Image (tube, rainbow, N blue to C red; front, side, top):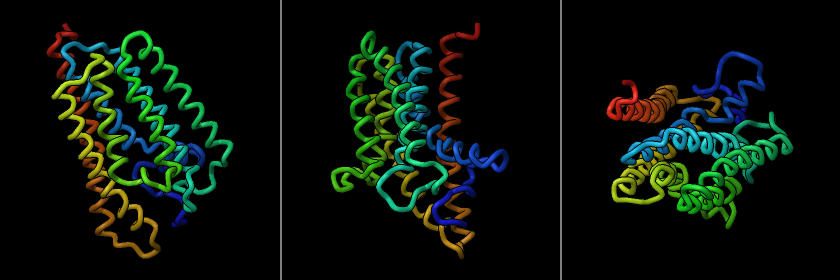
Length: 239
């Protein structure tokens, strides 16, 4: 395998044109899905649910994390890029800017009219997109702790804030849990990526780490989906 590509990752489609496969890979769908699931979990703690806000925050994180942050990661200061040279700097900056424009356009609408407290999360997440991926401040924020805070802890908190414009004990406790889950995911992901780069691989360890990553990411997404179903049923939206 070429060490500057990740085409053989389990979440990259094995069908379609190369650019399509690379673009889907760039989104890191299972891990972006984890982040969106954290926002949903936070939202489900609200006494009442505004479903348009659930959808809006999901779109915000798809755009800001799935597109902008991952494009920034491909443009970052490291010599080895996760997707090689399939995207040039112009393409990546276009993805970064367009992703952030969509995310902050939707976010500003809600923050100005309904949830001003969300500004705190919006500013922090915007900061981490650049500080983490471009390794600003001598790479101080480019580590597992800040990763888990930015894409694990803050999304769950954002979900509750988006619904209530407030913070409470339960969402803080949940955000601590989602931060820990995100920390475990990134801790497993790093040795997995290193093993995948090797010409001679430890197949058993690769499969074991891959199974763990699948369990964490897909399990998180399934749990979030179940929480939506539970709230819909408990709020009698089906009847």
